[in-house]
Length: 461
Image (cartoon, rainbow, N blue to C red; front, side, top):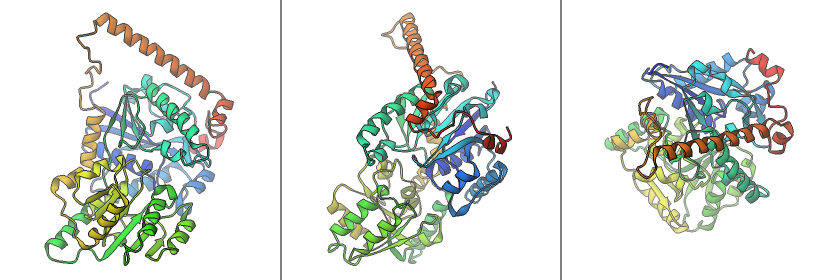
């Protein structure tokens, strides 16, 4: 192979579904390809028209992959200052209504030709591999990097029989990431520990948010009023996204927070219940439909309140900091990255939440330094990704480090034994994932071993 690297970024969602695994891999692809010295292919799911209607908002559907690709490219080009040069490919997928997730159909490793199989980046490697039946990723690609986005364990614990399901899922996640990935990047310590993993936030923010932050800084420096609104929160409107914690805090401390007004923005399964709970408070808590956080509507808010503890790294928290706002959030591993920013107020108790909220409404945010602004950017996130994935090393550099305590023959025997055990583990996973009855038992969408006739037709196979 040539020394020019090729990155194939596989992810579990796509726009117009406004979820982290649709947005962040898209930005990652654009910025990895920005300098022109890497070839990058973003591989995203293609859904049938029926599934698109279930997943995509505002009745947006696509008749063909070309139409879908045009939508994705238009979205990213509106948000960055350069023309992205990455390729887009689609793999067949189905939407699971039970899991509320998009799952691959067939062997998705096939969508990258062998001659281009260099580095695979699996965004949500556990999700992509629960039901993987096909070529072993590590056999096809020189280097396989998994990026863990979601705290699945925290979510399933909230379900019926959650503790039992969480225990099984933890084992399954460890198993498939061990056998299919060389390296795992966990976005924060909020995710479960994984084999060969490192914790590093490799996400940045849409540059538009940093531009808003610069505008607000100029207004403050010129003695103008930069923020005319108080506090707000934005997120998918489900109880697990922090709405329960926030409304409980507001209810418990209504007297101390008298006069506080909070706007909640979001759309989700629990919207009606959230609205009803907010109406019971003596405080002014208004509930609004979800909107893009980049909407000018949000520019004038000064305080972003985010009590969620189910996120891995909250994108909206990073965006609020980039816009120069004061952020109030819980002391939780998902917020560790944000502790370096003076405008991030992390509370350890209910009393601290109340005090920080009252203080924030009377204070002015501290101006972001150039370094803090850079830390939030996708340029910095891409540099962190390359380092965490150990991709700054020469291609030929060995990943095996000998120690003086182990002789070479013993080391090689140990390595061979580990490889044999891994091969046996892969064989077992492939055997189980190749049986329809086993797949169904563990939650797979029926008949997803191979794409059906319609998916093949859509993708031109």
